Length: 69
Image (cartoon, rainbow, N blue to C red; front, side):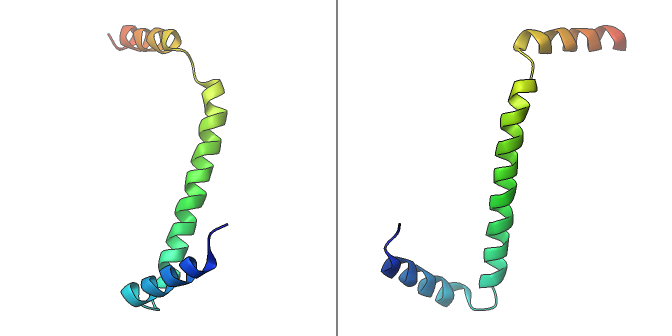
């Protein structure tokens, strides 16, 4: 757990640099970004099991090349 004195100092510095009106907007953006990142990680983990090997990808790309000719 972080030292709360440091957290307060960082919060005060952010408050002075950014201003009171922008802090909620920045916090909301960080929360949304964090949720998207977590969602991407969970989708990536489940998608990696479904992802094919390099041989499968090569076969698919060869099949596409043949059908487009």
